[in-house]
Amino acid sequence: MLLDERSVEIAPMQKLNLTLAEIKDITGKTHRQKQALVLAAMSIPFKIRPDGTILVSREAYNTSMGCNHDQPEKVIEPDFGMMAN
Image (cartoon, rainbow, N blue to C red; front, side):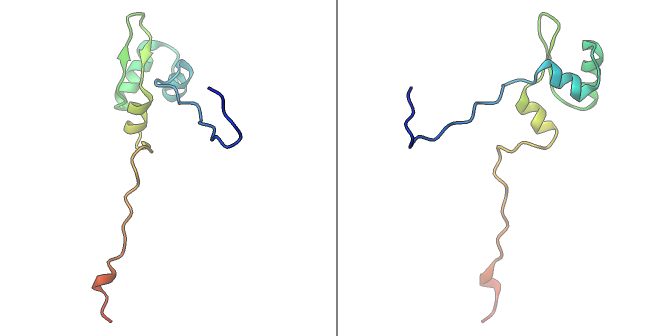
């Protein structure tokens, strides 16, 4: 697909799952069994693949850490109807 000068560039989609390096950074561990223990202790959902590597979805990680920015922020508006003239 060709883009002209009026087109807007779309940012590349984030990876669906955390990388092995990210899992190591989050857990502080290099061994898979210890990573799994740390993830479980932090209540971060994960799966173990058939090859033994750990799979953590980016969405599950963000949600468990309270940083899911896909949800719009709730804006509280003042009720000006309550004000007396």
